Length: 326
Image (cartoon, rainbow, N blue to C red; front, side, top):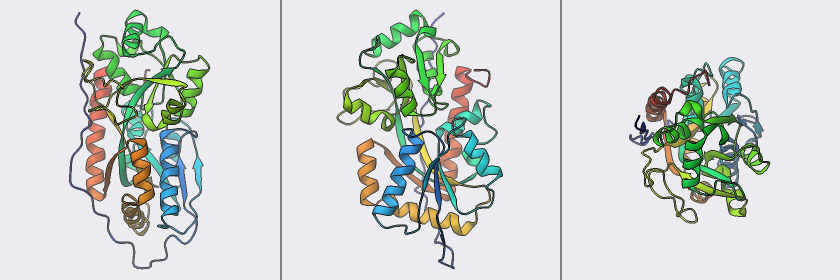
């Protein structure tokens, strides 16, 4: 039987969303607003939350306190459920969301997706990367494919909920049944890196920013990226799956959401403020450093973008069969 090839391209278009002006009162926020990363420190959500707060504070866009909290659980599902149910209607909470939550919902592992809460803005798209420990058995893309074909159960893949989809598509494109891949769930890049360095995982997959510091330290090595184009230096020599003959491209969008039924004054405030942040010096420097592709949208444009991403995820989950039974 010939190898099944799946193509999933997350290339979403549309006009830039324009934020509405803040409410008339002008007194929001009147106190601290908690920014939640629904995963462990070192995860993409954590990196994003702290980068957002740093830019808002350093560039003096927000004067109210913005405490960051980590609330891991269920690859974002636990905190999303809290925001949907316990924090409904509140204005003192915002959180980071991404493709992960859409994948969890598509797989039947979470009742909610980001489209069910109050989506405030999309921020950027990040490319996925597969990495391995420097002293591991798998040192390059060819080693990875050979190991998967030889015995996929021996290739322990550290992956958060969203990371399983691009790797499953890659395995399928390489002629390996996605259901045979030995995924082990972790909440983010920090835990995944620890698992590799401890020998508990052969490889890991996440967004580039989740591995950047460890890659720069030389403790892990990049194996392949699912970017549409080669990455910029210093990762320009990392092979893309597409250029290597595996027709898979997938990017991970990240954004900000609030509780269900968040007051419109708060939604408008954050949409406007985050739009200002998206062109601030601190944020632009962070985007460049992490090789994020800016994708700032609010309002109906953000909703349309996320809806199209959800369709892409649904199709990918069906194509690979990585449903709730996994």
